[in-house]
Amino acid sequence: MDLKIIVLIGVILLMMIFGCKKKTKTNAEHPVPYVPIDITVYPNDPLNFKIQAIGGWIYVNGGINGIILYRKSQQEFVALERTSSYLPDNAGAKAKVMSDNFTCRDTISDSRWQIFDGGVTQGPASWGLRVYGATYDGNSVRIKN
Image 1 (tube, rainbow, N blue to C red):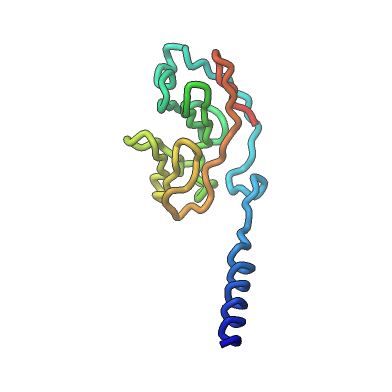
Image 2: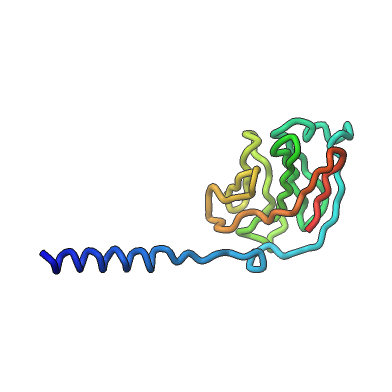
């Protein structure tokens, strides 16, 4: 009986030790190249009417293949690089916002990401979309890294 308990405890400890080692992905390892950007967008401009409401999004020129600017809340925006994290060297592999307005899809690999944070929802991509810093001052959104 004591041997069974010791073996059980040993197995549990091994599972905890080897099961909890999760490799953390860093921004430096991201497959989409780093490019410096500094872009200002004015949500109240009539041309940007789609981002005047929460849940709205627009494509913005910049980055490598463009940026998706998404309005997450009244004071928060998310800026995502459109370059596919699965096929970063293929200019045609751009993330496009799907008709549900919550999912981005690379039409070549069929990888999918969430628009509100760039996280992967469907592979083969294992990396999220590159996220740029987006700050809102009540008048303009500054996208910068």
